[in-house]
Image 1 (tube, rainbow, N blue to C red):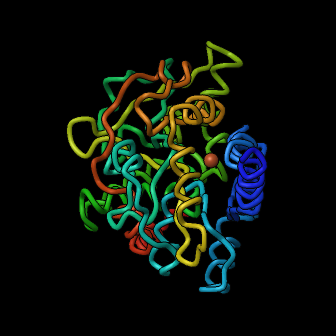
Image 2: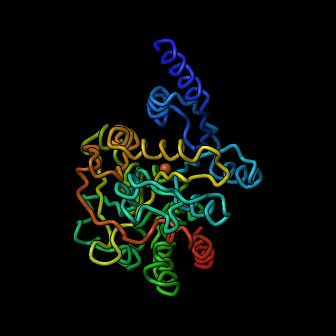
Image 3: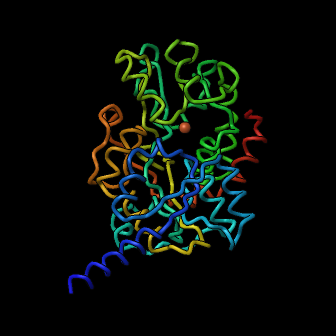
Length: 328
Ligand SMILES: [Fe+2]
């Protein structure tokens, strides 16, 4: 009997060890903290992380098609997840735990991908020259009072493609076009390459207001609590804050959907969500996980109720519109 149990255990361990999960990810393993290490140890799964840029990974998934060894796809932006879904690269996620844990708006409407950590793309301002009460809505930034006082990141960033998609979703094309035209007219300097450059210019007084992701500001404040940039959560009485974040999609060709689902559930568990959201300075989707103190000090805010995938579905329109108004 003992021998039988021992050999059954050996067989179980062997089959558990034989399990492999291939994750295509824009994040390298060290950026994902101990999540992969712990999941591997607990489930006996060999996790292979295939790292690339957003474009490279989608291209790889598309060209491999049904023969792709990938089980999961991790990216940093709803624009890319929505694109992967449009290309038919995902299949439906079946998980009671995820349905319970992940708010509906963070799920694709067909449940093929979801956002696991999020940030808000918000208005930021220099409190020496701007009062919080002057910034209620994104639309305010088109007002001529901000002429020569606004900084924006380039329109070529997926973050601004997603933001403009959110504008189109809530305001329609014409109003978005007028607002963006006003914003472009108000620019103090040419659009910046990244959010950090813009935040530093607000602090330095080159511009008074800008639009950036919450997680970029946090490290500056950790280093210097007197840093001259504050957050204004936009449109809290209308469309609510635009959010974007780190997503996971279940790859259609996966031969290990059960194990892949287990990994997604693990990533959404409070155990992983707390520490990893803190390391990313992003918000956890799991309400039971703690929010990092610097970003929780920005204040609480209401999130756009639209599905992240619906926003992502407007990316092409957004690109076209930003070109039309000559937002570089
Ligand atoms: Fe970023």
